[in-house]
Image (tube, rainbow, N blue to C red; front, side, top):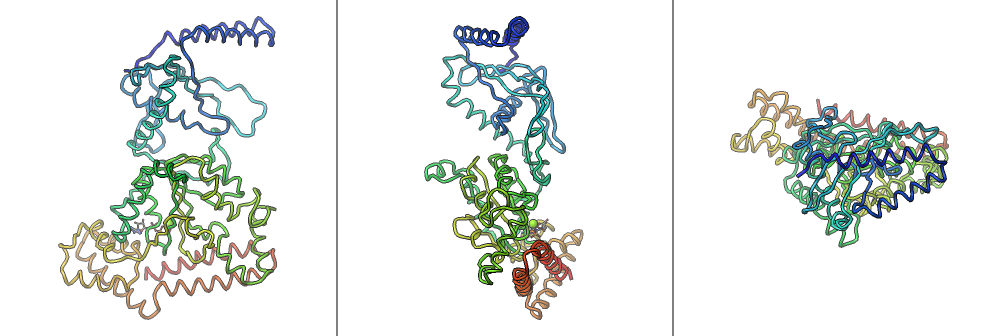
Amino acid sequence: MKEYWTPFASLLGVLAFCQSLIQVVFPPELRFAIVKLFNRIFHGFSSYCYFDITEIDGVNTNELYNAVQLYLSSSVSITGSRLSLTRALNSSSTTFGLSNNDCMVDTYNGVTVLWEHVVTQRQAQTFSWRPLPEEKRGFTLRIKKRDKTLILDSYLDYIMEKANDIRRKNQDRLLYTNSKGGSLDSRGHPWESVPFKHPSTFETLAMDPVKKQEIMEDLMGFANGQGFYQKTGRAWKRGYLLYGPPGTGKSSMIAAMANYLGYDIYDLELTEVHTNSDLRKLLMKTSSKSIIVIEDIDCSLNLTNRKKANSTSSHARSAYYDMGEMRGGGGSGEDGGNNTMTLSGLLNFTDGLWSCCGSERIFVFTTNHIEKLDPALLRSGRMDMHIFMSYCSFPALKLLLKNYLGLNEVDLEVAVLEELEGVVDRAEMTPADVSEVLIKNRSNKEKAVRELLAALKVRAETNAKTGGPRERDAENVEEDEEQEKRALETPKQGCDEFEEESCKQRKGNDEKDDDIIKK
Ligand SMILES: Nc1ncnc2c1ncn2[C@@H]1O[C@H](COP(=O)(O)OP(=O)(O)OP(=O)(O)O)[C@@H](O)[C@H]1O
Ligand SMILES: [Mg+2]
């Protein structure tokens, strides 16, 4: 049972009045001694103790503050008479909250506690390393001294759990981006967020059903595995590397993972991160139950295969390592100090001590060119699962037919099914291409199937003549490598240009592939 409790607020008001009176009458030293004595006497006689939960704890956002707010908002909505209402941009739900400086009683395991929402104006600051919000916000929890153990042992954990449940039920997850280039907002967040409403789920994801089931079980095992991770002394985190050609569902898979687990997504734009210490700050500001995504990792940072670079020449090697310094403006080479963004900084981010700040986090890297990644990223244990997102297979095709046209296997003629099965692997078409044919003709199911079959046949024939996208891709990779080798052998000042050119080239190749597919 929860209700407003005004006598407590009045008592606090009297205390505040006494304190301001003391401030006016006595000099600062005497004032300090009197206030201390006054507090000691008051607390000595009082049977209550108080806990302050401030919104910002030093430089970090206090997760407990957010949890208390959410927890109380779930109860206030029913019993409160004075509420603050908020609705985030594009959000589907309204949040009720305790108004400024209002109090509320809550009962837990037969123990009654009092919550006060304390909001005060921040005094004008002469200097601050970052802008602070105008208001200082926090909750004060008042409990009986004799209930302290019970409350501290389980009540706060209960609140955290409840808040997580509420968030999951609201289904309003957030998509964060660091595209502001590391600048902080007034609450010290380097991330900007929007409500995440991607409709992709494992039901809509077309891929090998056995592999899909394996991934879903792995994710669920992770989410429910707190005890296991604790027992085995492992950090509660998991890494997935999604690789495969463009349009095979890597981004859709990330959205499906987030929707399946109810996690937020942090989309990390590596090109906006300039130093290893910036990366650590970003990591510190991510919350638990989240997926941290780095898309197209081969293009975001110079993480291409070092082995190949090493085998060229010592001159080339030093040019390669110097690239990190040039980008960050004078760091300490490949191992990198904090002045530059390096591979080792990234590995430390996912793997090292820093990866363990917070818990229940999933790292997902995606790439179109796994062969271009540094072996250090691929070493076993680094990413727990390597998932190949392949061209459309027969089971995936059947799922797309069902999702887009509502056609089950039994709705199709046996001969058509056999034709589709016979041609789909040779066609090497991505699920994105297949979806496009189906969407275009979705008002006429028969025509859609006919056109799809024709498109698959054309693609299979082209592949038979040209070797297919896999071979074309391999040729492009060789071309890229040749170009990288040439750039590594040129003087250092060409490195930045080379980097840009190489990335453009890769993007160009992808577009070329897309064109071929569309034809
Ligand atoms: N496996 C799939 N199942 C269902 N739909 C898919 C699948 N793959 C691709 N699609 C469709 O194609 C579109 C593009 O897919 P998506 O962006 O997930 O590909 P990607 O692998 O991330 O590509 P890129 O490498 O270019 O980032 C999606 O909007 C989705 O509709
Ligand atoms: Mg993608």
